[in-house]
Image 1 (cartoon, helix red, strand yellow):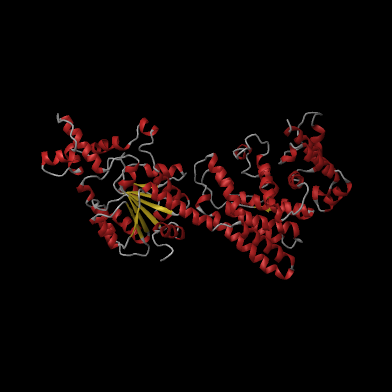
Image 2 (cartoon, rainbow, N blue to C red):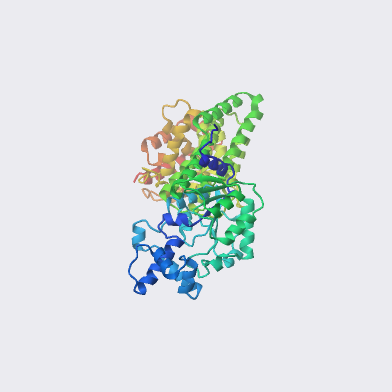
Length: 596
């Protein structure tokens, strides 16, 4: 007995997961039937009924038998359409009513994407499926893809093929072999289905040669040109899986034997595709860092950091983890092409945190126990993540901005480690470090990635997190929650971690405030009317701005002689005591406005 005996779906899931984008899906009318869109045979019998009733024939228990007895032939879809219509436009009009959902259909869940369509769309979104071939006229597959935020390249005619995005460049390529029900150029008679154009044949030959196949809902009996393309395919570099209810017919059996297809017995497409998608997702999740492996990485960082002779191993450890993170960030879950929803935003935030956690916690270790020699390493990590975030320039703005969230997480963990260690010079240098992207002028981290200066920091956006709809500083509050979970790696025992976190944010606000000249700030202080509540200059502020206990304690700290001198000696506040006092004044003004 083998591990996978009797479980072909798990075997297929491994193939799809390990060969992301290699497998194409071939869908037939079976998938549309589950959405209560009738098959060609059902449309044929309904047309027979409608024509006969119009001619005065009484209702029959079996219209196929009636047709055979009256006409002497089997009911034929193509023959009926040719008799009833004189042009492709007329055929399209007949099909329209069988496919387009009306108000009642939508209310009762008919003629809308099924579980199978949604599962395939999720496999496309995760990057595991890229090519979909279908003989169906409907738009159920396209609608399901768009619900997942994917705009597919749809080929439904020779004309659309000539101007379409190339197959290799498309995130999702949908080939509608027989056309679209809203296009008069649909193919549905035997004559029309007997042969494809040269351009279609070349495209099919390429897909069948370069991809594995997952077939579902296709009988393999009547589509002569598609059968011919299937039989032409010379290579078997990737497997063919044929999912079907019961046994295959004679024609399908011939095709399956030709490509040595693996047969999967299913109850329905709505059972098969969701199960396949779930198993692929399970395999993907099994590759993510588990808590134990995160602890091993953190402990390795501590061990290598403790001895100078292990600096090479330390660098290699961080390089490997950074490369792992960059590779994961290229996955389909983080594409900026998507449709906004609150659930999608929450899911992406959680996913970014999950993949970034190991590297962020390791970097926090460097902040807490480093000696300054790690600065170059941290700089390289932050810049690599920041550049990676900017390499895609098109997509939904909110998702584009969120691509730099991993940089914010790593920056915050490292900064809190520095704050815990009282490494004020290194923390000041961190916030002053310049970052450049897209030929833009380099800007300090304090004005690009810190709280309100970060492009992804919109409070209304972060208020979409569960329970955050009324938060004044939702990003700051959420980062505190995240760092509270990660802090054991680089903070250890701290009786007031909340204040430590706010102290880190205060130092970021001060670094941003330093972008102003002392003379300009003094002039603003003189010009502002007493009690006006106008700040001397804008600066990003975290939760200490409205949390009076924390803000009050931090301002008291800054006015203590020993602490103030320590900061000034580290280069903070431009080495100026008067500048530090201006910051305290500005902090209190903004905090007063935030507490309203």
